Length: 496
Image (cartoon, rainbow, N blue to C red; front, side, top):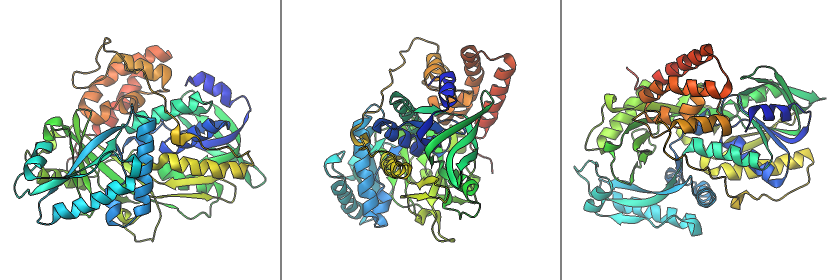
């Protein structure tokens, strides 16, 4: 993903079969699918790949145990099948993880056990393993810091874990391998039209400056929480299609959940599930479900969200975490298909919606990481019909995703509290389209999420390396450091 080469391709005047706007899970999935079928594809992303919601998830590839309680068996079945496909196609990014639901009530273990047997059945041949009833002693062996008072046992089940931002970069690289042309930090300003039909976009290169006119037979709006903004440009009378829900997460030191299993709380005070998950030698606690009035480019966890997560973590962990133990706080916003005006976001469907506007703009919204591939398949099927393209079968159910060659230790480590090396910064710049310090420390590595203070300390060195790679001056370095350190300060546990 060489930027100069990409810009040359986009400026060559080719009319692409598909132009995808949005470089999150859905947009990248569409680019992979369409390119793998042999269609010509361009993708533009206003910020960085997975710069929004798609890098701020709970890091789970799962069927959604909570949707069993809601009776949405079709969604659970679909997500479980997609979980199995992703685990098969990207074994270097997806791994099996044991989850334990602790049982404190007399009937909890039986109730949860029966529900999880149904979960196993719905997964069919792509199951990751059977659920098991655990005794009190077995539960405490799996969850080494679980609150013992009143504990009666537990239920173990299997789901999968991944690194969302790394999967996004992998999808971008896989799409490129199949001929797609992808550009991050490129903002769409307006649509090009022939008559009433949208035939392309005018965009701005936010790194090098200058405009881009990109034409395509079909334009796809896959901008997540921002889809309604593009729909309004297409048709000012378009009604909003998305409700925004925010999910916040706390990151704690590993000592708060030192075993190999994750903790799942099936019902919190607000009626949703909560996880405490071992992730990259940390513990990830989340998530909330807070309705927001509109989309934010850089959402911040609310004081009440952080207090809610910390309170519930203390209920279930014997060693209670305090605000000063929190290494990082991050929030993402979900695009939920809009329901009734007064509906709570936790009651809205996590399924997706595909629509076509009066100018021909194909919009996809909703869904989640686990089902990104299926969403992409449906989008490309429809896009091909709308564009009059020859039909081609979808190959992605069995398409291996590109595997990166691991960086061998040997270069300087970025920070003693973080598992990353300077060589990874150079690879991010040379091969993975990273353009800024934030791209590197938030998404090509996960430094910002793992330890916001340590990530802030890394910023000067990372900026200096990027300056060497891109030929930037000292003023650019200083501006990058200021910008990133201001961002990192917002990842601290909020005072309230």
